[in-house]
Length: 268
Length: 294
Image (cartoon, rainbow over all chains, first blue to last red; front, side):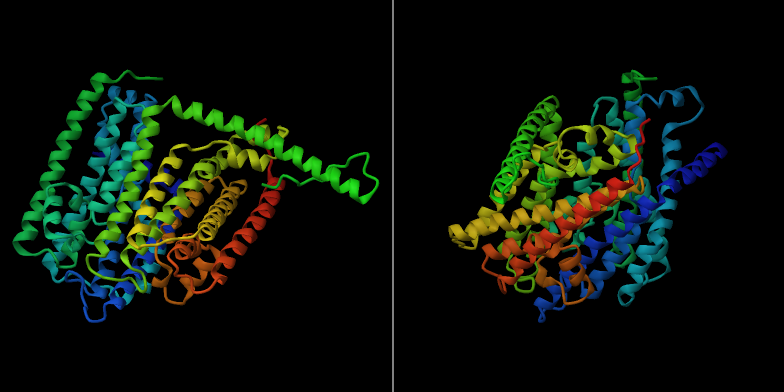
């Protein structure tokens, strides 16, 4: 355990090198978000006789995007998948096969470190942004939802990491995987609830999405926080989310085992 | 490109008329020279792309997917409203198409090259470009052609044609020429701003983050301008980083939504002004360049 704490603290120092990049990324990322908020304002203003869209008032809609931005900063994968793919391609994982270090746990420690630094760098722009929209800041309905939110954010982070990790392991077989990373990212972007809250979709489509991991990568914790997911649905959702984490973990282990057999240690 | 930077003195230039003719001939030679260089660069890009065919096709799929995603967003939004301010569904589709078209043409010619500038500075490869007998900015800006982006630009055009048909638009030749001109101004504007940000790499190695950050702002260009109330955001993104003009003005020209021709003039004037500023910034940056190679 202590060795992974060491990795974590090393990861913090490494990530600190990129703090300016993180700051740029977080700041520039807010501009399209602000544009989306203006878009929603205009939509609500164009329909003065209808105060809500699928149960969201304008204020509720803005709250969704605020919470979504915070959850995304806490759990989103930024560089990890590229680094893992590069480690494999350039033969740097050979050393992990010799040392008593588990590569998945090692990467998870680095991911956690990266998130800590990213969140710290994003604190200034995101904090300012949230402060500007403070009228739409709402708390979770009660302590139970808060606890469920915290748990599901942790699960979201694990799920995000494990899915990206498994995807990056494709580098065992393919030289160039950035296209696959971008295709996956596109699905996460729209089906994860990055672009809009998923429950404004037609119910049939939402039901289909529930069978994919994407809603549990972002939308679910936000819905819990806003109290839109409650009672039995909440409990079932947490269970499904946990099941996805376990399932993808198993898949990651399996793909790793297959990949190692295929691995030729190029350059190592 | 600034081909005619240095007036070339010709020995036979005695009368003002012959001097002007000489200068014209020299300028013509420069244009022909650079056109020849560009033909070779295009051929190289083609060879490079064709040596990784699967990857070439997959990148087209990625871009198509992102375009489809934007259109899906429009479809979802219009499930819940008839209008966004004054914009109807197919007008917004036309706008998203125009924005994607301009972005893809920009990507085809300039994006990779602008991103690579910071690498050239960091590794000292820039020395090599400065020594070649071509305009360095020309070479750095147009070295690689991204051929897949033309396929995606064509997909954007197809979506625009469909949206135009749904809106029963019948643009005449003059409007189409105007549209092309405004799109060209939009591409030039994106290029000038990106190139300026890339030139920051002469000061810091983290300029690539800036370039990608700017690329993020493209998302603003496909939002109808009428959605933005008068205020700081609208002023900044109209006059400083004119994202709200780049795609909105050409789309509004086709959809006959322009409030006044002044909007077109503003886009053209800003494109020219920002391009002129980027030339100044480029010259200033070059002066700062201390080679990184030995």
